[in-house]
Image (cartoon, rainbow, N blue to C red; front, top):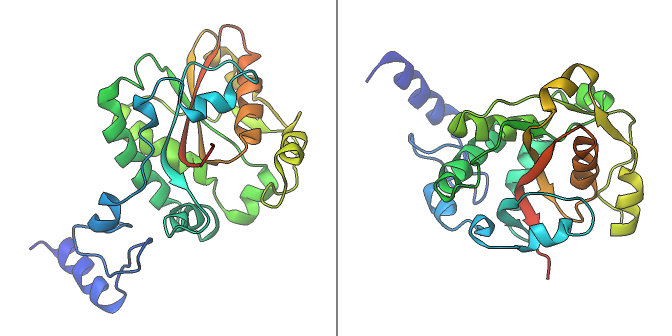
Length: 234
């Protein structure tokens, strides 16, 4: 056993790491989520489904190439803790870890073929200053860790907006309108590129599709979508 592993094992004894989903103490080879919870994760399999519910959500609103989400988001499910840890509890590395795991599973399907750049959905600088990070960037990095597709922060939140959490679908759409634009220094990099737009969770799609609209305004851009989680859409 090397010194680094000895220190990590000692730290686990004093401050045991716990599974984000079930709370069980993690083994030395487990990270963020235990093997049992990873195996039971409510995955969507959308990357294998033609015109899946995520793609239907965008239909008639913003033209996209394809879309997928890794697991289902249910407020009553313990798996929602993954999103909350990444977004609100100063644990964004869990997003990178789960995104890399998802990308590893999805990649053989060809979902990432032809994608040139990965762009995370931004948050306004005031929110980033208070939170200290943008959790969606970590998710984008997790995908890049597996696919080696470059990540650029090309979309910016030009205006702050109220939280979407307690708004209905129509209110979310109105709240997200005209908020996002393209950072001028990145516009040239985007032209005639296929962009994978990445977010943590999609419910109504208001924020994600507003960002997609901003990207689509750049000459020759095509857009695909990936989120770590998605609410059920019947």
